[in-house]
Length: 452
Image (cartoon, rainbow, N blue to C red; front, side, top):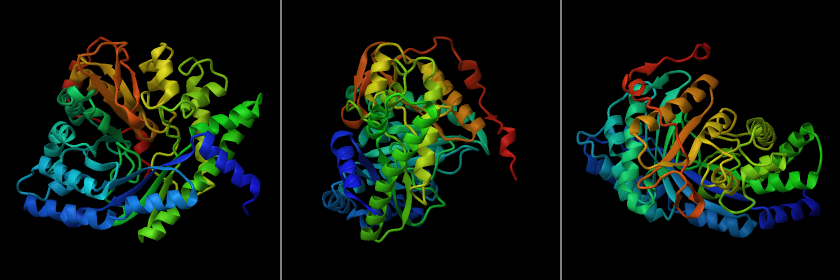
């Protein structure tokens, strides 16, 4: 039963502590749009997306107005485009990207994810064509997001794909250098990518998903930080308990929005992703939560342990609040999208090495990190390989979204605006991994993959 105290507490969370539903994402299967003629296929893709998602934005706005819950983004995810492209005799990936862009604009969504390929065990028909088209596709569209899964605990790491993705990330930055290198900010390279992730840029609609589904991503770093600030001095067991209780409340709100959107749109409810997704707004920061626990600055010794506590407590609280938790679910640590992370990177407390360690215990990986503009493709590939190895060995999702800041050096800044924020260019090791990356082949799956 709701009481006046619960209602007032929720109002405070929304008004003062940046509580929101970060995204309602409609997943749409495009498997029945396959056709040997690329023009016919593109028309089927456009027709299906616009038919299913025509009321998505309006429905989200209605729920937002009626319940008083901010819903920041309305998005679409689709079947990995490489799978659809495979059926075409003329595999024109750019034409498909422009079709997806046209559909996104027609539906009025913020982003459409799924210009993607799954190549953890090798390249299938359409995969290489799509991957090589990513830089151009991201440069000629505004709403399209791309992802490539290059490894998994079950399959190992496809190092040929890793080598290719280093070149793709770099070229994507070069083609959008006149727009602060926005291209790679819309591109994620995964290991163990989830099929039901509602968050961009990594969202796609997995082959095992229903024909259409509603997934919701909630957010509330500011709420967690405020709760810890009110708690005062207490031991870490009490801190974990408080975070669990707060995560429960946040997730219940997401469950309400997801169920209501599902009912109104006549589409099955998929999952609630209970990730703590920060923004550049002051107070809405995962880094500030860690500092509220007692760290002088995010990135100092102890940061990984504090993040592990936070991530675990968020998951435990969230799974009690919803029967269908999925996606990434935990704590995000994107540098340019988190005010506390931006500060820590600028003052030198947070390094790439420390971020890599933190990714072993958080939701995703190295996210929204600006790197020097002259970084070679092999170094980008090596960053991807390191992060994929953490995910593969630990049976968790890891990812890399780095932005080569073309024409900029360490300490200079890139600014994307909006939720993507801004941040400094961070230093990398200057020693070369080129020979290792150029060997190619596959890193075999670890022993823990043999669970059958």
